[in-house]
Amino acid sequence: MPEEAAITAGALVRVLAALAELPIEQRRAVLLAAMYGRTAAEIALSEVIPLGTAKSRIRTGMAKLRKAIVIEEASCATI
Amino acid sequence: MRDYLGDSRQCEPIQEELAELAPGILSGRRRSEVLRHAGSCERCSAELDQLSIVADTMLRLVPQGEPPRGFELRLAERLQESAVERRPRRVRRASVLSAVAVLAVVLGFGLGEVATLRGGNNQSRAATGNLTSADLRRHGHVLGEVFVASGNPAWMFMTVDSGAWSGAVTCQVTLVDGRTVAIGQFKLSGGYGTWGAPITSSSQVRTAQLVAPSGAVIATAHLPV
Image (tube, rainbow over all chains, first blue to last red):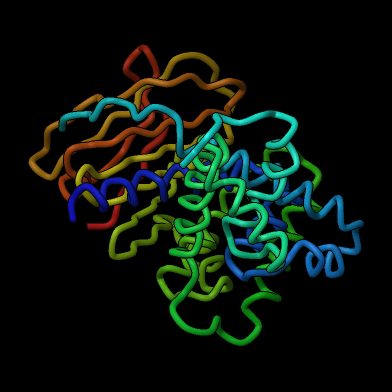
């Protein structure tokens, strides 16, 4: 479906861009949570950090990625 | 029925957990409590929808089936490499490299292969079914990267993380028919800047260039045919 494809392409690029901008510790936490289903407790254990810190990294990282997809779409450049 | 738009006292602890609910890593009991709240709160429901799009988008980057043996270790090593790098610009390059490494997962490449692809090839570039990338180079030096996602509309994203330019620059593309078209402007600050926009067609683009206000081409990316 074209509309669905457009959303996916835009979201993909924006999320990737925002992911590249995340501080390394937030990017690790978000990748492990969203791509590998690691819980905050598992991330805390593997990163050797307090549970609250792991939760905070997931929350902050995901919030930044969320902002990346809700920015108003720019007008389409005609080529 | 959603009976309120969100009381900040009630929403605050819930919103902290939405980021864990969206990728499905929240424990069962908390999951049902947060879901119950989101079902009656427009603000939290909207935030959950957006976080779910993020989580779903990231899931699209995971290879189908089980990751190759050692994948997570290599991913962790790649991330660790950028963590220990002290020079800011190198960190930024490593950040972009990590994003490219994630893209490569879509391609089915291992991370080592991606490093080879980027490190040893003068016209380093990669392509997926719907995503293409190429280094943005000036005299052989990588200043940044260009991503093109096909679709309707297609998307182009340009990131610059090296060099010394500051001020307005233009993203210009050359098309398969030889035409050159300026498609967007953005600002560089000390060699850093990003820009992205939907474009009407990705298949026509052959090169993307970073152009100074004088018209001089700062850097060029050759996209895969």
